[in-house]
Image 1 (cartoon, one colour):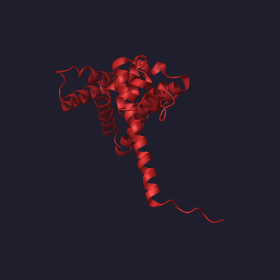
Image 2: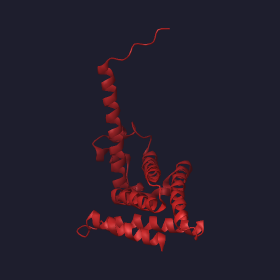
Image 3: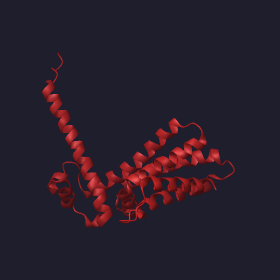
Length: 208
């Protein structure tokens, strides 16, 4: 049987452009939703609000997500996946335990400085997810934590895994809370200053 003829180049280009536009719109909805959920809370935001924030009608949001709950799930699953993927990437590039831990800290600081709204939504709204989505987020988070525990166990073989896990969670709490509290208008230090403080304090809390 003869194969179907290839689509004309102009048609393929149009399909690619539509796909890019759809992906860009989806990303814009997620970014706007993170900001609105952080400012007003999940319950205080409607689909119409999300549409208005990105310049479309509320119903147009349904072309990208089946509902508001799916938007929240995409935000939280996406953040957890990005943290995990980033951790695995930096660990592939750093062989020595000390370099690995410093790379993990720097990676998490990048997230904390760049996604304070997502951190706030994670803290406040995780329980709004249905059981399946919440399980997926928790699983990604556990895998992320275990990368930290593995590196710490090589640096601190004298400490029990349970203690190292507590230290990792404590470091996350430090890194996730400080950038948000530093966003008070007119009082925020430069990101470089915040980064240095966070990296130093996280290292101290993990290795003391």
